[in-house]
Length: 210
Image (cartoon, rainbow, N blue to C red):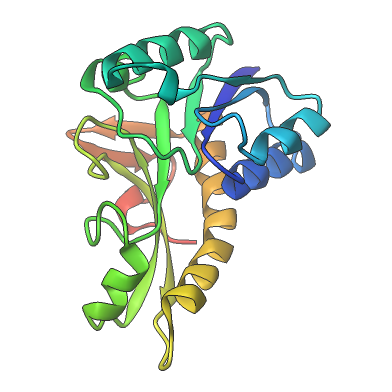
């Protein structure tokens, strides 16, 4: 039974998707904790209602990123995680923190990486005249939004799309994609070879979409 710790900063809709999938499909894993850097994060209420332990490590209480990351790491490690899942966790993490969880921390990003890293991805896709957009699940490395790709989901960019309509359509796919990718990890089906993810008994992950 693997332990999953999920980090959020707000509503945590991707966290909800992972929790629901784990419950519905009876994963060989448990959500050991949901942790937020913001005490007002609505996702904490969802987790508490399901009996999932929660914790808050408020970044505003720490003078530096390094101090915050050290406190966050200490809190996470109390739950003995096999996997750390970033689900709308709006913090840039320090290299020592990322290295501590190397190969066992996933993030979901709302673009088809390597396109549009960072913020403003949906408007970026519209401004660039992209014909398709989507989301990417990747292992976290010290370089922001550049870790080995596990899986991607694609949506068309439609005539008349706005940032809001495009982001809403991508979010629907995120809620399918993230549980899919997390389950691959839980089932020990992911391997990183030469900086690329391979899905055991499957195709190279960078070509895999759902």
